[in-house]
Amino acid sequence: MVTVLAGCSGSPASEDTPTPTPTEESDDSSDGDSSGDGGDGSSGDGESTPEDTESESEGESGGGTLQMLATGSIQTLDPINAKGSGAGYNQYNKSLMEFPNGLYPPEPAVVEGYDISEDGLTYTFNLRSDVTFHDGTELTASDVVYSYRRLAESDNSRNRDDIIGETMTIDHEKDASLSEPTDETTLSDVVPDSLAVEAVDESTFEMTLASPFQYTLYQIAGGAFAILPENSVGDVEGYDGEYEYNEFFSTASGGPTFAGLGPFEVDSWTKGSQIQLTAYDDYYGDGPQLDGITYTVVSDGNTRLSRFQNENAHILEGMPTASFTPDNVSIEDRNGNREVGTYTFGDGMEVNYGEIPALTTEYIVFNCLDVPLAVRRAFAYAMNQHDIAENVYKGTGKPAYHITPPAPYPTFEDGQSGEESYDMHAENGYESNTEFAADGYPYGYGETRLDDARAVMEEAGYGEDNRFSVTATTISGDSGYQQVFTTLQSKLRSAYIDMEITEAEFGTIISQAISGDMPIFGLGDGMEYPGPQNFLRFLHGANPSNQFTRWGAEGSYATEEYRQTARDAWDENYAAEGTTQADHSEAFQTIEEMNWASVQELPFLHPNSQRFWHQNVDVEMYGVMENQTFTDVTLE
Image 1 (spheres, helix red, strand yellow):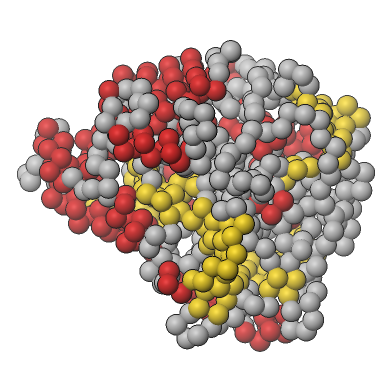
Image 2 (tube, helix red, strand yellow):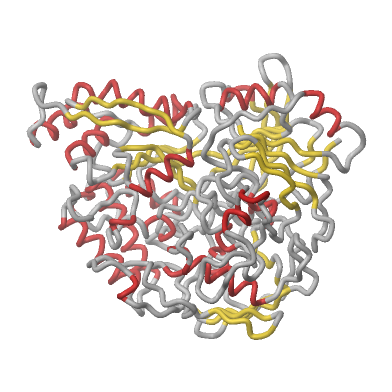
């Protein structure tokens, strides 16, 4: 499934240039500064009064409760299931590795160090001896084995592709009898307890990959790889479970009885409204300085902005694009590609401001079972990415013509940046591998081509007497997406397409995308590691019935020639043994070109991430991984 938990990437030294995972032994240790302060998918409006906020925050630095706004309701605390429902998940969870303040490369979190075998297959991690779960039990290697097996084997996992997919694959056995007969690849046929993970002893965890993968340490730093106490729930073979699933991860039977490894533990949770975290007294690392964090669910962007301006929230992650005024920003410091300064509201209130180019792509997803290719291409002809970036998002992002963001885009010459290669390919077809992309982006680079939109529809048999009707779903309270869809709606009418626009919470969109219930919807995706394969693994048609686009599934509007070209590029130039980085670049560019040809996903923006925070909050601007624990945050 398309990964939706946030995960981008940046380097402390040069955040705009992706670097591979180190392969040498590391004995660094980290006191924790990693991940996750935001949530997605939404409902509810839980309120917090100004008086409450003031009483918790006043006084000298240290202590207090940080008031945060979650964009969507938290559906579950299960890290292997939490797509689009994880507000604060990295405050109460920990993985083996982490991205300190959102910077890459990843560093040890709950491990003292690690070794990588010469063949790049076996990773051995030495666990810290001072780490305990929130229930007081000590972390052991058996807990890691259990957590990784759940990610690979549990029916509750939405993230199997992260551990046994086509990129980072821990070695395992397959049993065809465990999956439905199909010519697609599948992730449901893993033999129970065959995953190559082992507790060598209580403090040593070892895992072996099926083939080397340069971003392994990045991948396991992600939220899906959070470590839980062994036998917490019994949803994998060999474990009975100490608690029922919803008792541990949700609110059943007085739950959650959840226990993680993060600096904060779950104190109380009202679904759709609020989750309250308190500082874990026995946290192994430095901090936290705060007494706790409260995430209040406020789905509407304007309401979140109003609450922040009224000082009912300390930090605002992003602002509705319609309300943002670029001229009100004053940048005072630049560190790599992170910019920090102030933002002044119309009433004179001045707050801190941070901005960083995200390794993220905003795009429209088409369910190819429902939307013919001619319609998908008409959407592409009608869209003007440059106009969207400038007039809808007010210059706070880069026009998107590829699914891969610019920084990690494949390069073809020494000293070339990803952004240079990205732009040349989109503008003039630089190093194109297919005739379809020989002249660059085929639907109009920086222009709308409605005559071509009408022509492609007429060629497919559409016209005034045979119009195509469809419903598009956008994220509730997201003014940027709403403007994009509304602008397309008026343009597409002249191309015989009648589009109704509806809204849904982010979590609802993800659930319906998994079940295939939406023909067209908007989505944003952030990278878990700075490699094109992070996104492109979903676009070469290997497992279409389990992809949001369904491109290539039985009965879908798919061109087999395009699918075969993409499949061959992936299998022969990326996945095959002995391939080089040049081979990989060729494969990635070919898959991008086949997405142009098939329009499974229509990108329109690579956004900048923004943070606003009040003067009484001492917090750093995160790096492009956008993952940050609040261990060092203080309130005055």
